[in-house]
Length: 188
Image (cartoon, rainbow, N blue to C red; front, side):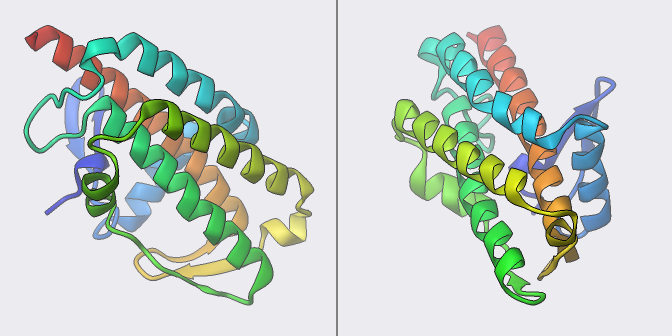
């Protein structure tokens, strides 16, 4: 089964990328969403964008567009989870030689942790983690950013690649949350 959060809409066509079976395509998709933008700037802007989207969602915050899709609050929870996971990965990569990078089942985390989550608590967590990870990024040298961890599903990923992918991941899920809200409103 393809994880729900791997779905992307491009040019009004529904394209599905499996981050495990199509690891290189998944990396390229996230990096393309970042483009030439500064990953730290993108990530610094992300919490305010989520905060505005949560406010805009209002009564639709927990409404799923379909039974097997995530609501806006679940997408926010996934974004916070990704930040937690990447925070650890970045630190392992900097501190260990080629550490193993363990994947996680994002669907299980969302189902277990976020269906009834407090959006304000998720936003505070996201803001705090983003600041911490941006500070770490800014303190690293080019040599440190080239250090590598070995992801069990995607293979070698450098500190820099991991951080850049997270910025693309931010954009991907913010866009997904906007589409989710549009779908929910259209069917209300």
